[in-house]
Amino acid sequence: MPDGSRIAEPMKVTLKVLRGDQASTYTDQQGRFEFLHVAAGDYTIEVEADRDRDRFEILDEKITVRTNTPNFVTLSLKEKRTGQKSVRDKTVSVAMLDQKIPSAAKREFDNATRLSQQGNLQESIAALQRALAIYPDYLMALNDLGAQLIELGRLDEALAPLRRAIKIDPSSFNPQLNLGIILVRKKDFDAALAGLDKALSAEPSSPAAHLYAGLAAAGAKDNQRAEREFKSASDLGGRNFSVALIYLGQLYLKLGEKQKAIDSLQRYLKDDPDGPNAALAKNMLAGLN
Image 1: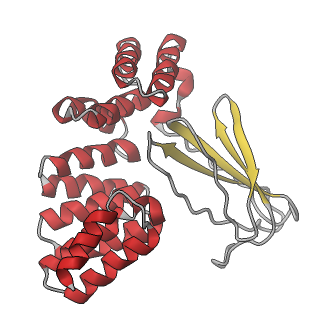
Image 2: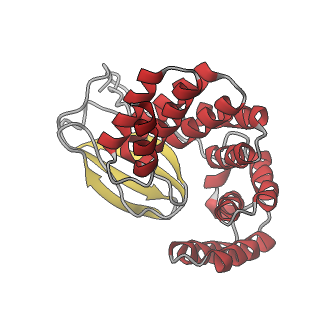
């Protein structure tokens, strides 16, 4: 709501692409909604009241979905001004200018998305490269190519498409995040933080950006920021980003703050008792007790 409280009445939420509606749902009694199994790409989320339609403006919010990463977005309703029509956001990013992309390039991109979802990354990369041969400025293809090369551990190869994507649209979130991930893994922490700061300015509620900003800050020995970023990643991402609590525990151990480390590790085991880092958390706790 405009005052910051959660909306109680159902709101229709529609996930849109330039070619039309992708899916629709309604919010629950706490204003929450979810779309599952959304392919990577750029979308618009549209929200309108199911009741009392004349009270609120129709709300549009652009979002970029990244492969294999949950996306979180918080939407704030706006009350209409008396006597004025709803104001719609007409801003379209470079990535959203789908009509400028040749149909052959779009077909290759759609094929790449399908192959990626099937786990055929090598074939997906080849399809993305074909799409870029047809349309070199295809921002979504550049980002996905970089992301898939990261998944295969080909970090140096991933740099070029991501940097080209950032050059095309410096405010685009995903390329900045993916570049930050590479730089963290290459231990170029200061450069990673610079890129991740740009990603966070574009999407401050991204748990992934906060997680990698925490890793970069820890690597740069900015312990206060690392603590803050790991906490934000955990709070925003919940169980999907519970690994942030492991990193937070490791940070507290490094700082000699034993009880905080114990609390963080115990919280991990409470939130994700069967998670991939459960054994590590238990071993760390055993050494602390």
